[in-house]
Image 1 (cartoon, one colour):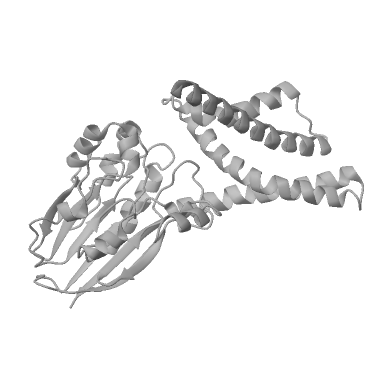
Image 2 (image 1 turned 30 degrees about the horizontal axis):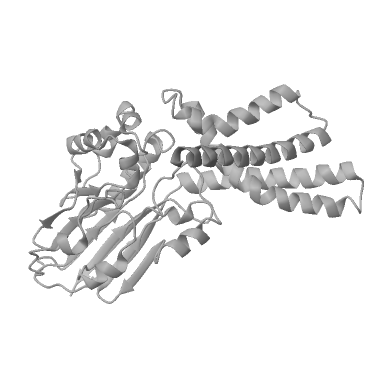
Length: 369
C-alpha cells in the first residue's frame, strides 16, 4: 500500500511539474511567434525539456557541469515565470481589448521577458557581490582573559560548481581584510559533494584564511546530503579547519566554543547534554547551522549563537516563507543574555541568484564587560 501511495505521489508531482513547464514554454512560444522569431517546434520543445530536466540530469552526469549550470538557472526561470506569466496573461487579456492583439502580445511579452532577464542579471550580481555586515555585541566578561574579540563568520558557501574559485577568492580576501581573531563557518561549506571542491583544489585557496585563534566550522544539512562526511572532514583537517561535531573547547581562556551537529543528524546531542559539566566561568558561543532552537539556547545560558541555513529565502518572495518558519531568519536578535545572529549566507543553493537578499560575510565585534 505504501509503495502504491509513493508511486501515485511521484506520478502526481510529475504531471503537475510538466503542466507548469508546458505553461511557461507555451507563453515563451507565443511571444516569439509574435516577433516572427518562431523556432521549429521540435527544436523549441527539445530546449524546454533540456532546461526543465537539466538539474535532474546533472545528478547522474556530475562530470558535465553545464547541466548543473543550466538547471540552476532554470529553477529561477521556473519560479519567476510562474509569478510573472499569470500577471502577463491578465494584462494581455485587458490590453487586447484596447489595441491590436498582435501588438498587445509583443508589448506584454517584451515587458515580461525584460523583467525576467533583469531578475536573472540583477540576482546574479547580488549573489557574486558579497557585502560585509558588522554586529557589535556586549557580553558579560565572567572570567574571560580578553576584553574584546573579533570574529569573522561565513555560512552557506556551498562551494563546488557554481560557487567556485572566484567566489572563494572573494571570501578569502574580504575575511582576511577584517583581520579577525577567530573565524567561524557555521555549516554548508560545500554543496553536497566534496569532490568538485577537491577536484578544483579549492582547499588550497581556503587554506589562505588566517586568524590567530583558529578556524572552526560545523556541518550543515548539505554536508549530510552529500553522504561523504568523512572525506569532507579529512579535507578540512588537511587545510587547518576544525569541524566541531557536538564538541566544545576553550579559545584563549576567553570563550567556550560549542559546535553542534546539524539538525539532520538524529543522533546529535541536545543543548543541555552539550552543556553538561560546564562550569559557566567563560562566555559561551555556539554554532548551530539551523536557527531552530533560540529559545532553548537562551534558557540554557548560551551567550551567542551563530547560524545560517535560511539564505533569507535567497530569491524574493521566498523570504516570506523563511520569516514564518524561523523565529529569526536573518540578522540579529537579543533574547535576555542571548545574542542570536543568522547570516543570509555567502554562497547560494541552486541558481546563483539573490533577490531580496545578498551574499554576505558577518563581522562580529564582542566587547566583554
